[in-house]
Each structure stands twice: as C-alpha cells, then as structure tokens.
Length: 362
Image 1 (tube, rainbow, N blue to C red):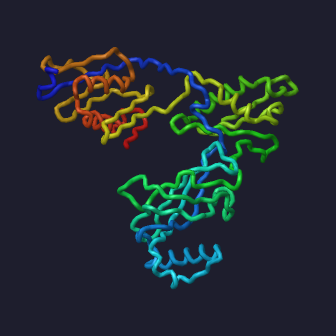
Image 2 (image 1 turned 60 degrees about the vertical axis):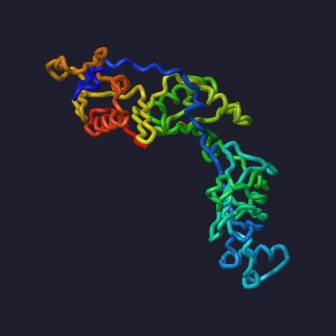
Image 3 (image 1 turned 90 degrees about the vertical axis):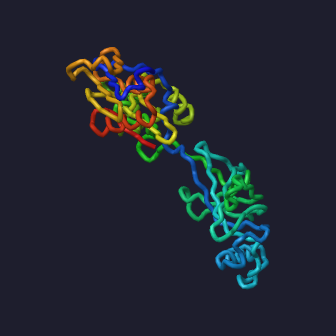
C-alpha cells in the first residue's frame, strides 16, 4: 500500500456498541466428556534381546541382574557374572495406553519401549514377554503381557521404538462412568478447558433439567425435580433417572445429544510467534487506547480529540464500543503490518489492561 512506505502512519479504530456474537448450536458431546472415561496408562520394565552388540548388557550390572531374573523364570538360572558378555540385551521401559473407551481381555494395543541404561541402539531387537501393570487401577497386578519385534520409527533416535500390537490384555479394562457411591447413581459431565465457565455450566444444567423434566416425578407440590446441578465451572453432575439405571449408556448418549445454542466461552487471544499464528475469539473487547510501535501508531476509540493529519494513513470502522479485536487484527493485516508486530501490539495492549481477554502465548 502507498501509505505503508511513509515514515509513520496512524490506524484508527472507532469504538461503539459491540454486536453480540452468533455461535452455531453444538451438542454437549463436543464440549463435554464423562468423568471416568479417561485413558489408562500401562507400564512395565522389560528386556529387548537380539541386538547386534548395541545393548547395555555386559557393562551394566542392573541389566545383567534383570536378565538373570528373566532366565530364572525360564528355568535357566545364571548369575550376573556369567552374563558379562551379553551385550545383545537392553533394559527398557515399556508404556502403552488403553483408550478412554476401554478394552477387553484378548485385545491388542501398541506399546513403546525406551532404553533405560546405556544401550546404543534397539535396532533389530525383540521385546521379551513382560507383564504390564496399570498403577491407576490396581498397582502390582499384571493386566497384560507385552512382547514382539521392536520397530524404530525415528532413525535418528535408535534407543526408542514401537512394538505394534505387542501388548495383549489379560484383564478387562472398562472405565466406569456411573458414580454409585451416593444415595442415587449419577454421572459427571466435565467441560473442556476452553469451554469451562460458571455461565456455561449453569446453562448446561438448565438444558438437561428441561430435557429430562419428566424423567423424575415431582415433589409433593408438583414441582419438577432437579436432575442436573452445576457444581463448578467445569463440572455438571446429573442423576441417572430410575428408568435408565439398567441402561446408563442410553442415558449418557441422550444427555450428550442435548444441544446448547450459544455456549459461553472465555475471551481469549492466542498467539504463536514461531508460526505467526493469531487466534481471536469473538468475545474479546478493547478499551480506548493509543499505542505506538516502531513507525505505527494505533488509536482505538473516539475518546481522543483531533483528527489525524492528512499525511497519515487512516482506517475507520463502524462505531462500536468496545472495539472488537478481530477488526484491529484485520486492519493491521490489510496495512501489511508484519505478524511479529501485530503480536507485539496485542501483547502490549494486554499488558496495559486495554485488551479484555486472556492472553495466551505459545
């Protein structure tokens, strides 16, 4: 633009009434999860064998002890001293993740192995049968067995690899989602971090109570009973109605199908200087302010008297108060202001208290 070549220019954003945002309705399943439905981590300590002299055996006494223990279980006892030349063995940590939906006995999942001692590489190795535990469920109890050939996914990191389908579950791992510790069974909806707020939790509780108002009989006065209760900005507890207690899955599905027209979200500006990304939610507001950065002067609002000189570039918007930040960012982009300068301006607006939003910088 012709004005961009000048020594300085002024960008004016006039303030006025901020128009309400228009959000499409979303189902609760897109902004909530059900408590108890979380991933389960399985861990184990095992041996990778068959290495071409790149293991940590022979020079590492803990590795030799682990190998001696494994041989003893196979009815082939040996002492650590007798295994001094076993450099084809490496001690590894094993990790696997059971998805939030759970798995049943006999199902297989991938696991990751990582060298713990001084192995140079796990290339060509094979994981020996290793019991896997779920510390969050029942520490010390094996719930699966891991074994199989190790695949190195990143050639630059030979000390870590994956065993595809190498873990076979020996027990069912099905996370529970119905809390039966109280007088009546209930579920808890957990709002996603980006959606959690007192307003949204209240609105969700209201919608569920309205949707299931006939699921419970009323009190003596005929008033409908409360089914859902917001207990915090990120949690809504919902009682399971009697007719659903034999089939809670159907109840959860129907709850998650409830539609919320305009979920309240916290005002946020998210920037990433490395990638040059700027994300502004529709709730972000600006107060009148003037900020100067390098050869750029930004003026927001009508509280400052006097028009800018004719020699300066001026960009006016429809009068709004407070001014929407997305218009500011768009205007700066139209003036070809470098992204790093846009991020710097937003950062300074936040520090000055004129940017009314949470500022997140990655």
